[in-house]
Image (tube, rainbow, N blue to C red; front, side):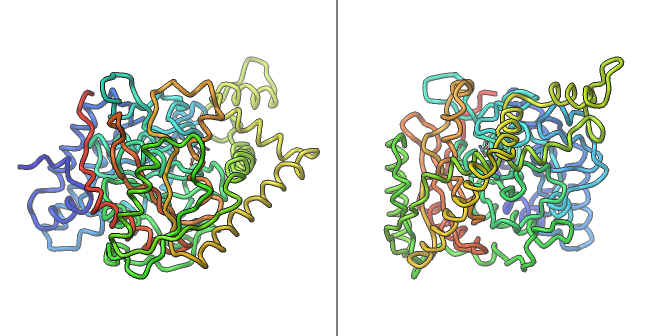
Amino acid sequence: MTDLTNLGVKAIRDGVASGDFTAREVAEAFNANVAAAAELNAFIVTTPDHALAAADAADAKRAKGEDLGAMGGVPIGMKDLFATNGVQTTAASHILEGFTPHYESTVSQNLWDAGAGMLGKLNLDQFAMGSSNETSYFGNVASPWRKEGTNAPMSPGGSSGGSSSAVSARLAPAATGTDTGGSIRQPAAFTGICGIKPTYGRCSRWGVVAFASSLDQAGPMARSVEDCAIMLGAMAGFDPKDATSLKADVPDWEAGLSADLSGKKVGIPREYRMEGTDQAILDSWEQGKEWLRDAGAEIVDISLPHTKYALPAYYIIAPAEASSNLARYDGVRYGLRDLPDGAGLQDMYAETRAAGFGDEVKRRILIGTYVLSAGFYDAYYNQAQKVRALVARDFDQAWAECDLILAPTTPTASFPLESLNEDPLTMYLNDVFAVPASLAGLPAMSVPATLNPDGLPLGLQLVGKAFDEQSVLNAGLAIQQRAGFHHAPEKWW
Ligand code: GLN
């Protein structure tokens, strides 16, 4: 029998439905890969029994001739930012260590309702703050990829680095991610997989640990565009429990897939030709244009004039919202409580937060509190909100000239772990191409394009109009078919 762990979502779902193998065999095979990959540190906790129970339920349904659901028999990894009933949920932080929710996030519940099971909770940057998966309280995640000729552990990207590492290493056919300013797309690009952040509001944020509420969006990470389309369909949908959830039907993105881009115009934003971008990335961008042209699209030059202000605005808005969201971790309601002998309430807050948050999270809280403080609110926070509106307007104006935008996902390929963490500004630059679509709330996807001369994956990014995930997925499919990216990391773990 073929190695079941090389199969993706669609192949597993269809294979289980047609009886080529059982869901239990699939879950056992992935559970074994997860157990054998401790060196990657992709999981904070593993939940093999959850995967087996869902698999047995799928097999039982099949025996009775019932519909298995869009994700029937597919075991997945769950980013540890989603609350999971009875399973520790930490956001990779010490302050939430030991926190076991009594409820299930809407997105994870949707996935279980569609027939999926859970292999475990995936490691991430603490509170989803980071671009390298080095800010987790539970240790760095290693990418399964290595730079040719070296053994240095590489970054799987962040913050969804446990997700990207697990999916590219065949520990899971797919995983959930969240993207506030690139955290699905950048790790997908670093590890040679696909990931889509849908339109803001498509996926409920209810039960997802909040980082920056006006930006946070969940989305799927998988090894093919088809698998992303299937899984996004299962995750998305209106949720009355999330006031920012979109009251819109979820299209059947899988059925709508087509790599024929005739009549579509794809914009190439000139401001994305930035200094410091690797030549191999610029070359793959050129190649991407050719692929889309070959698929029938017309390529047009466009301008997004406020691009260079997007990243600074993001690094004001996101920390501002984070400082407010993270105020709830006070030692009273959740997780850690540090109450020194004879201490009062204020001491408990201070001790708990000092012990419970990592350095990057503290940096964000300090920046956020500063930009929201009385004397600086107008100079920073209000100004950043105005810039955000201008960035969104750039896209609105671009849609007069094109239907989609093609750009690199990141300015560089993956880098060795610990090579950038003394330098937060360079680390923040990772998201320079990802953040504008986040500020504008637009759907955006990364699709693997090629390997660079060091043998590391590079991704191309597609940004679409609000609600038009279909065009993004379709252009992704056109690239996937032409790129023929079938590389897998060589197993060393
Ligand atoms: N890397 C970005 C940050 O650190 C984005 C994170 C994210 O999208 N969650 O804020």
